Length: 319
Image 1 (cartoon, rainbow, N blue to C red):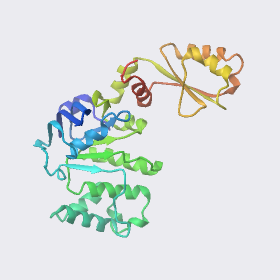
Image 2 (image 1 turned 90 degrees about the vertical axis):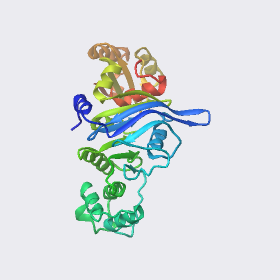
Image 3 (image 1 turned 180 degrees about the vertical axis):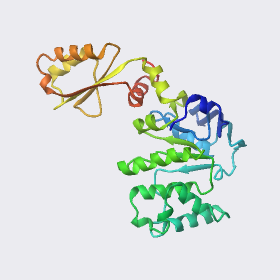
Image 4 (image 1 turned 90 degrees about the horizontal axis):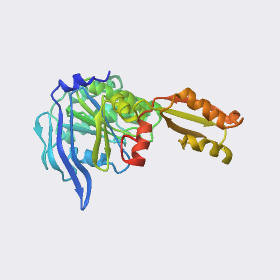
């Protein structure tokens, strides 16, 4: 279960980053970012394209020149520091040898890392709940199983900080759920876990806190529920789904209610401070008998998806 704010504040952070700044020529990709992440904490990092998410990860992994202070488990990380024993990066792509078994893959990678701990492979397999599949060839595994072994390969060095970098992009729902369960499970093993993701509903449900970036700056770093309450202050999101894309006269009737097109041409969304029953009643009246075109109307509290749409449009949390 996600931690409460007092739980987080009572723990000594694993990751401490202060005033991280990354520049590419004249462009500032990360602008004085400060964050700390506690053991047992799962942090989602979200933001529009160009927000600074990739530069943040590169700064943590030592892949870019960065100004500021950075430490993991009280070990200061400088340019040239070998970070593999402190930080694990789980990439989007599967980096395994298909003709080898799970155990053989991890043994090969352990040798490449120079690991002398003979129990590292066994421990990594146990952490991702793949012990009974140790001798299964990767080519015979499901997508979710491959994801688990990919994570096991990343955590062979038993790092304190684990970064999942868009690990669910382009994967099916079962494999996505597997990755998210693994991220939560690793946090429960007292690791600090960072999840870079566009799966905003999953981030809202899974993460203890979310770090919101925009134009290289930190807009927020707090629990999702608190962030959403602060950003929307009691507003409700009204979603209308039509049988077919609305005709011009229906679009005209929708205009006073400030509906915006959603994920499909048949889905339209509006935000309201008004009583939701009054809002929906007034909207149906405005359709002047064409409400048979409406397949569904739903009212809910705005989530991170609604917040991201606002940030992409305005660069701000509040309207």
